Amino acid sequence: MKNTTREYAEVVKNLAGFLDFVQNHCTEFDDVLFRGQKEDWPLLPKLARLRFRGELAVREAEARMLTSLRTRALPYLDTVPQNDWDWLTIAQHYGMATRLLDWSTNPLAALWFAVEQPARKNQDAVIWVFTPSQDDHVANPDSSSPFNSDRTRVFMPKHINRRIVAQHGWFTVHYIRKTDSKFVPLEKNERYTKSLMKLRIPAQSFPSIRTELDRCGINAATLYGDLVGLCRDSEWQHSLLDDEDVD
Image 1 (cartoon, rainbow, N blue to C red):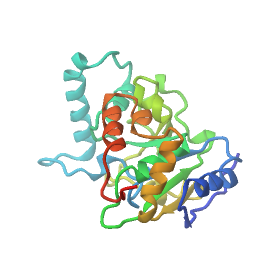
Image 2 (tube, rainbow, N blue to C red):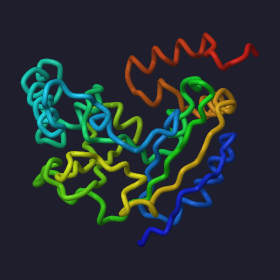
Image 3 (cartoon, rainbow, N blue to C red):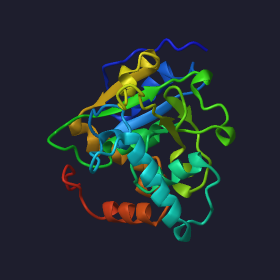
């Protein structure tokens, strides 16, 4: 199916409005991915935002970080990664900078991550909606490398930990240009500009949307799928964030 979507400037103030948008604009596509951001940052992976030591270029720094991870991580892993895609997934999951950017097939998960914490300096959140074509997917991860792709692609990781399962996690795998070793933000990538939609969530709507999602079973406990998420949820259920009022 050919993508014909365009960027929207639609404002979402409550859960019902968001679900209406998803129903009206997303159901015609075979694949729909969602990403929630508490601010309107560029669609770039963490690796694109690092400053590297010495004279390291981004590709060399990436390779060294992953080599270090492979050497030191095995005592901490329940299963052994089978290929570079698995190692990138593990690295991303535990917070190391990679060329991966997180997405979800669950729109409510994306909405939660957009409003989970109070807005910083009253900045609005955004939800990105991405409708890639089948040709945009990594065709065969078992026989390919994430470091040799000729363009940014979409990748569905193996369910190698609970968090990926809970968050219905997918990734975009970002291409590093050979000419200048730079990343192109997904929203400025000519191949994908018509496959992206953006919604804005006003900062003042965060508390009410957070509560609405919790009533639907969308919260830190269900989306992190581990003890970290359970502790976050237990704390929130019994205390107020800075943007929340006493009932």
